[in-house]
Amino acid sequence: MTHLLLIKCPDARGLVYQVTGVLFGLGLNRVRNGELVEREGDVFFMRTEFAGGFEAAGLLATKEHHCLSELLVRHAFGELNAHILAGISNHEVLGELTRKFELPFHYLPHEGRSRDQHEAEVLAQLAQYAPLLW
Image 1 (cartoon, rainbow, N blue to C red):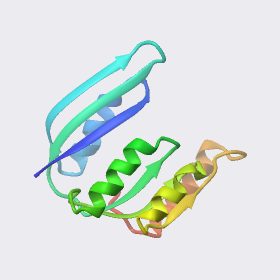
Image 2 (cartoon, one colour; image 1 turned 90 degrees about the horizontal axis):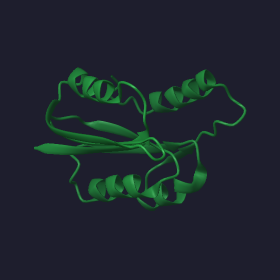
Image 3 (cartoon, helix red, strand yellow; image 1 turned 120 degrees about the vertical axis):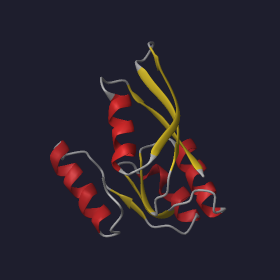
């Protein structure tokens, strides 16, 4: 069974290497990969098809609903080959959507915290669910 990973984020050096390195570290095999950078706005897009199995997942989201909703719908219909345990975001906007799928949602705002403090809070929240971390 293959899986699809879609990424949209600000462009940065080494993104393809970092993402494929995580997949490799999890024992997953990259089957097909495509990426591009939209120069206007410096936005990175990547579509990666990979094979292999994994079991538990925590979803980390920001404000964009399209990726999260796709994952939640696929999870609800048993199409992910993964078990979503919860959603975590630095914005409250996706909480209602996540709860509609009867999953816990944790809002961890980043304002007033250093990056290290915020990342520690996110990792502590993730630890409650004991997900497979790389």
